[in-house]
Amino acid sequence: MSEEANTAVIRRFYDELWNRWELDVATEIVSPSIRFRGSIGTTLSGRDAFLTYVENVRAAFPDWHNQVDELLAVEDRVIARLTWSGTHRGPLGDLEASGARVTYVGAAFFRLADAMIEEAWVVGDTQQLWRAIYRGIE
Image: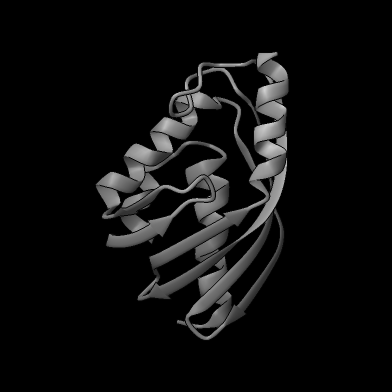
């Protein structure tokens, strides 16, 4: 795959799967054996486990939005610089909904093969996330 094609897969990952909650797109762009690590510490393997994670985020932040600030591609790797935002309306792990509006920044590192995301490692400034949530709980 070309770097341009790999970048297009990552755009679909955020625009369709995450921002529009079109989970069926996962069968087209997420490997059945994906290895994923999220910015809040979630580590998992497999498309089904990944989709469960997406549903959990959706339950916690129904208006979750991923703004892609920049994409860089080199061969089978794509790096995304992101700004995430949403309103904490449902449980997130042990935390009940706080009603807090959160925004935080980070980056995601992907490895692709045959137009499918094989690996994703997401690193975010979770201090911003936790501060906003805990402020909403107080």
